[in-house]
Length: 185
Image 1: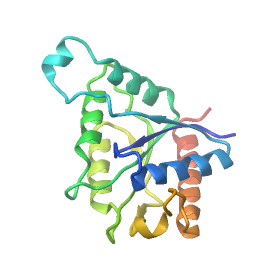
Image 2: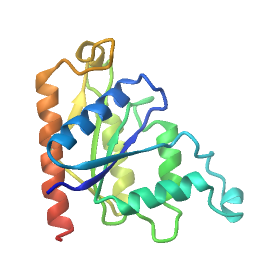
Image 3: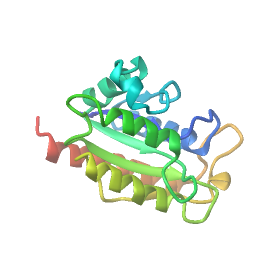
């Protein structure tokens, strides 16, 4: 029996390699029996404590509910300037301020794709630091850093690299096992 996974893409671009990689996560997850929902972060305003004081925006509440309802979360994100994209960090900053912050105790997997050779390694380590502060439970292995993504996806956004597909399957297996360890049913 699969788990309920929430996929969050750290890129807003519809044709991003990370959106393509998230689509592979969905395909492989469905093969394993997981229910995978994706979250939108494009409607979340820039964090502003004054705005928060007047009430959490609907997009923030919705994302918080999606995180809370999921058994596990998977982030698929590019690396911007050696770190987490601002739009993703902003979404996390908002969610972290919700009552009963939903990342606490949540199993989380991280992966990313880039045209560069080290495929989002620095972003992933920075995101892990953020998640530790939020008391999330990041999965340690396997680490998936899809380098040279422009050579691994075709013009229609399909992954043409069997090794990467296999690694994504292993990541989902590990996330399933990690979730079972942390949240016995």
